Amino acid sequence: MLLLGDPVGHSLSAAFQNAGFEAAGIAAVYQPRQVSAADLPQVLDEIRRDPDVLGANITIPHKITVASLLDGLGPDAQQLGAVNTLSHRGQVLVGWNTDRTGFAQALEDAGYDPRRRAALVLGAGGAARAVVDVLRSTASRVWVAARNLEQARRLCRDLNVEAGGPTPFGSLKLVVGRVDLIVNATPVGLDGHSLVFPADWLNADHFVFDLLYNPPLTPLVRAARDHGARAVNGLAMLLYQGLASFEIWTGRPAPEAAMRAALERAVLGSAAP
Picture (cartoon, rainbow, N blue to C red):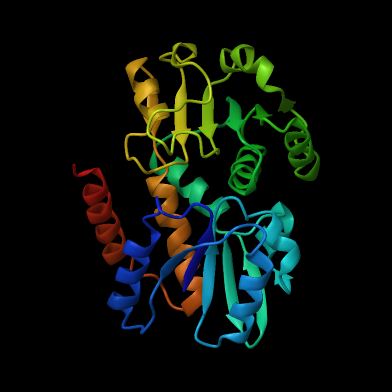
């Protein structure tokens, strides 16, 4: 099993997926592999020819581009135009999306109800598509901000976002002041200090969901809490999407307790000095 992305060094997926295989008695190993956009088609062809690779996870920046390189798509992946999980049977690669269910479950775990709330999604990549698809049927408005405004427009067209829509980064301050929920679906913050917008735009009325999880206290989560807002990182989403991926690959129920415990240990290890 592989994790394909660029970068992949921050990922904690191997820790809990390998624990899941061990708990289920499955002789499989999950390994991160850094793959550039230029090399992705070749790597997929290698997977097709290798019967020992049962599947893979796909992470930034390949979740959208990989969809056109596969032999088929599951229902969620087809609807979203984004893939985070591959299954391999014979020489056929099928793409799936477990980010959607992962985000929905994590939001429920956090005790946040987006109904009749206005939301801002930062980013317009594959993870952002999953987030917007969850929110568009419940939130009163969903604004999508991306540095590439055309990418945000395309997301909103593809997912029929009618209330809210794409917004340029130059209007972020105004939008942040009007929304209840802010979701960061960009890699900004992986360096441990960067923010998409100034921290003083946040206030105690916001609920912040940062899809990043490493470092565990992301810059956005820290800034939100410093300004009195409730904030969570993406660790629960990582777990839930990973459980769903495990079941796609193996056809078995995921050993959630073992995988959750392994992820918690990995988080503690990543936070250690």
